View: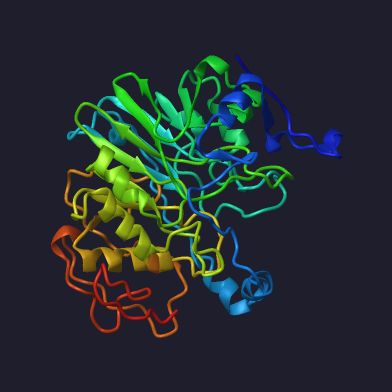
Length: 410
């Protein structure tokens, strides 16, 4: 039996429903039995800094920089593809089709099932509808217009991954909800029937139709409402069907666990990997684009197999880096590694089995780097374009595992 109660605060009468609910009863007892639950809270296997010591003041200065603020947002309308009946009205030819909805929200059609990861349809990733980071492009499709979904998968409870209005909109859909330990309390509080919620610890699995969904480790943290303790778990996810396997990273820093996940569950036809909202101020909890490519390779057993879909960028302004930088650096790192990436506009479905031709659509709506955009390699499948970008083009810090790199002039 599960149970929950609203998160207690001294201002309980004014507590927003978006704060969620405290796990209680058997749900709380199960959380406490988890190997990840130590001294009253969930912890990563290694000490993890959410913010570097002494970073608060320089971070504030960076955030307030006028030039930096201009680069952190697009200067034009972000192109959005509106999926049509033609896009979704026929099964994917390969059996696997993926649609990035923006940020970390992804609809995966895999072996006859539909899985929706980290759906956020709200205008702000915030507990309030009047404050907090605001969406920079519209959702590609209204929630009510989505095709029927078999499973909704949540990576952790941060507002840009767990959105109360979206969950309420999906509560009556009939979908199964598969979440890390403790997150089910929030879902029940928002109207999802307990019978349709499955909470998993790392390395635990559940079945939805013909799919196996497995919670796998991530190096991150949780946090909702006004409390600081880590009272719900965070996870990455493996979804395996009879013919295909996919991976969704959620939010995470780079850690050796990717190779272990790949050895246990890979290789993958597609990985959806966080490459945005990184910063030197919080290096342990979010990956840079170069680390995202390294994670993709680790997940594939060290080989550039499958297709990487970069996620956690483009939709909300959550970090000091320029808006388009995650895409530029990811594609450059992928070319150096010989890895295949797909960087579609939000809402445009693609099949990983097809050859991916990347066009820099983001450049048309972004503030250019100080020295101009780097040269773009010839159009063609990224898998076959493994040469380094020339003319000072490759972005990001040097990474010995991925080849030499050159600084981007942002």
